[in-house]
Image (cartoon, rainbow, N blue to C red; front, side):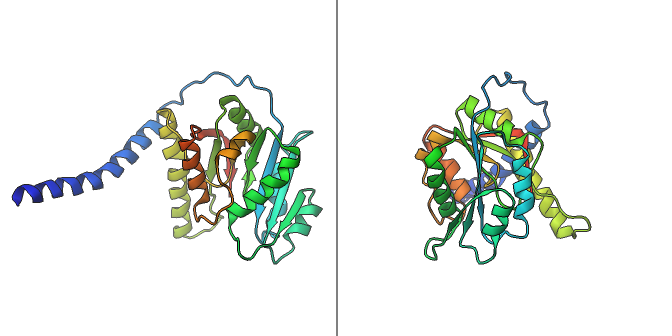
Length: 249
C-alpha cells in the first residue's frame, strides 16, 4: 500500500511539474538569439485574404484598409458576411472588398464561414490563402512575409498574433495582454527554436491552397483553429511560426 501511494504521489507530482518545465524551457529558448535561416528565394505568390465577419460593421473598415495596403495586382480580398444582422456586408463593399453573404441559422460558427469563403475563392483559386479576423490590423509586410514563407516551406504559416490593451485599460485587460504575449509570442518562439510546430491562432493563418483539401473547414468546433492545426499535423503539414508577420487586435 505504501509503495502504491508513493507511486501515485510521484505520478501526480510529475503531472504538475511537467507543464511548468515545458513552459520554462519555452521561455528560456525564446530568449536565445533567433537562428539564422536561408533567405526566401520564392517569388511572391498570388494571394487571397479571407475575412470571416459576423456583425463587424463598426471595425471592419479599418481591417480592410490595413489589408488592401499590402495587396498587389492579382490578389483578392474576400469578406464573408456570416449570419449578420447589421450592415457589415454593405460597409465592407463600400470599403472596396469583395463580399459574399452567408445566412444559415443551423450552421453557425467561423468554420462554416471559412468553408463558404473558400468555395467562393475556388472559382479563381489563389496560390496562398490567408485568414484575417475582422477586428485585426496588419503589421508592415505581413501579407508578403506570410505568403513567401508559406509557399517556400510548403507548410501552413502562422503570424505573430498579439492583443494591445487600450490606453487606460484596467488591470484585468493588461494581464490578458501579457498572457496573450506569453501564449502567442514566447511559447511559439521557444518551440520554433527547436524546430517544432506552431499552433494555429485563428487569425494571421496562411495556407498553400492545395493543402486546404487536407482539412475539414466547415464545422461548429469551438476551437476550429486548434483542430485545423492538429489535422494538418496528422497529414504531414505541421504549421510554421513566422514572427516577422504581425497581426494585432
